[in-house]
Image (cartoon, rainbow, N blue to C red; front, side):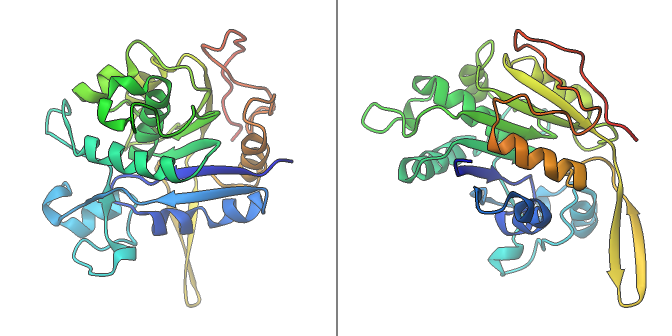
Length: 277
């Protein structure tokens, strides 16, 4: 198998260090053939940027309990790729993030991009921008794109960012083969928001996963926490799926649920499967 490099984008209020730790089991399953390069969003969040009366409670609700809004430790600093206005019509800082990603792509070569939540929205936007780089002129270097098109994109709990810049980049649709992974019980990015991204993804594959149980060990006590569905699935069958899919994103990789292949908008549509309980 050829080695692949993929860069990964973390979600709103997480950072590269936390995302890397959360994908520890997946990274181990991928072995040495596939390298995941984790990137921090450039925007540092302040307590006022987090919804709710308590920043700590908000971080917990966002699934980012490990970060600390008041910490000076860069590995615990909550970050983002942009900050949306209350109406979700403007993504403040998205231009800064695209310029940061331009510089990362200019330094090295990657096969694809993998993102979760806000990071998934950014991953899809970046894939679309590499298809039509002239839609955002500052992204160009000496008039040329900084990187070839991605071979694939993975968007877990993704959505379509709403902003004049992104609307121009996406246009009617983008073509990069994209795996969309949706949580059936996701209450943070609900299905309706994910479907907006699917509608502009002309070469899409969709997989769904159930919520689950998360084991928290504290001395001799084991706590079971019910997950909302807003996470990157990494159960045994999903780890096998990720390894096979990331090793050959355009191959006929069986679904981690039913064993069939779930595709839409690809020209070879088969029914979208649902994961077995």
